[in-house]
Amino acid sequence: MKVMTKSWVSGALCAAMLGPALLGAGVAQAAEFTVGQHNKTFVQDGDKVEKITIKVGDTIHFKNMDPWFHNVFSLSDLKTFDLGSYPQGQHKSVVFDEAGMAEVECAIHPQMFMEVEVAP
Ligand SMILES: [Cu+2]
Image (tube, rainbow, N blue to C red; front, side, top):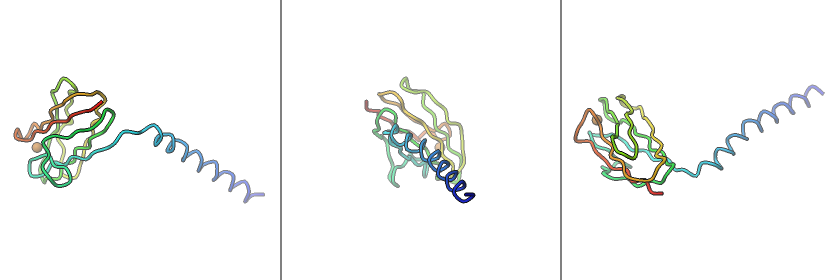
């Protein structure tokens, strides 16, 4: 009897944990992209990237791969943000929730620049 009770509890816990995960996966059609900051450029899969095309609702993770601080900000009409400055190994994320173009820059290295095209 005691064993049956334990088993029921663990089954209920399991369902409780799986429920939100499955729900989240169903809702989230959005993709996630990682853009690195490497050698003072924005990179994707190891190559310099000057423009990335994503879709509304997608997320970009900006990851600092350099042994110095980087910043990420945008003053574009589409989306204005400033992720602050952060060291090697850390990343900050932005969800692009409207279609249009955004210019993304680094406040510490003025030569760092990329465009994000958010397709509907
Ligand atoms: Cu930088």
